[in-house]
Length: 491
Image 1 (cartoon, rainbow, N blue to C red):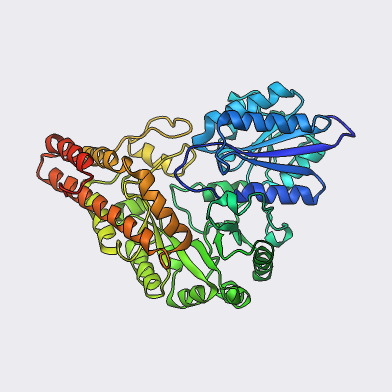
Image 2 (cartoon, rainbow, N blue to C red):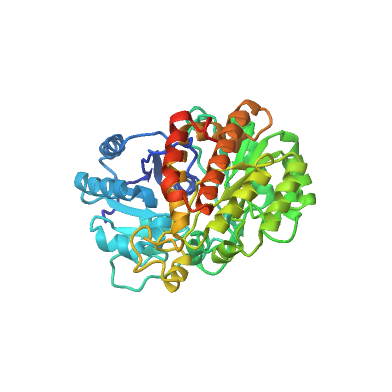
């Protein structure tokens, strides 16, 4: 650690391919604001949002290091499961440029896989475990070897867990580092809470926040949130906003929602947020509509009872049905997050999932309905899969698991062939509805519905072929015809 020298921090969101439009990385934006507020020169290189290639990312990082050659470099990387290889390339390259540079990682993927990542990557100096603001500030201030709570290093001392920041009003408003033009029509983002009171077995949220104690969810006040929103309206003239909370609702009380509605309803914004289905009530929907909420994403996950138990969802499908109806009656677009295929589901369960989608396809917006369960080594349900003999020793970073039902595998593989061919077109339309809602975007809704109708009809035919025992022979021929004729003549 060099003493008496200015320190500079570069936070990197790695490049990656995606059909989705760019969004702000709120985790890095909070870190930047917190460090800048403590007089630490901090910049963000969001290669994902700016659609940089890996080589462009390396060049931009090198340029930053050369421009600030007289400072001590700290480079923080936010890797995802899908960007693991880029993570290695970027981290190693930073050390090649300046071996004295401190390279650290953070976020869900790095925190939950800290032992493996540190063991396999000698260029990696530290991993910020869990919430990062206070830990990163201490790292920049005192260095790797200072026994900092929340910082996982190669030091022999026992790792010290850091308690969560309970009052999120202590944090500055997140930095705004992407222009309106760079967001390509996506709304700016804001956080009103961190964590979720739920405990779904396929989700990393509860596992991540447990790294800072047993408190599942922390909050900002309505006054703080309203003040930040006012600032965004004044400074950027925003007309839409995305609340990126893991779960917007916080407890049985409606006090926060009532106060926030009272403070911002006059701004006439279009707002998107996410919630568990059981948190949607007619009274809350009325307040949300008044506040300006136009889209709510709910985690329905499945209409198959066995799958919901496997997911540890804690609610039944009837809760999701009720939420969809309430939101539809309130004129709020309902975005349904759904997992069509998973390792334990049988063909009957897939058919239940399809029937649910058909029932609500005119009342809600669905992600592409060929979705399946991606299982990470750190997900709680890995233990269940091992007990069911559906996976062996956990892989890295994803778990290689077996599907219990061969028919489901055949249906899934054939349906994926169909869905893959027009995925870009699907999300070109669905993304607009997910970001802005249906009202005023009816032309995109029309094309989206057309694509969804084809999807459901093709999946229904595959299920029918399976029931007749001819899926293996007739299924590939059917899908080939669908691809040749865009599903029109064969559906």
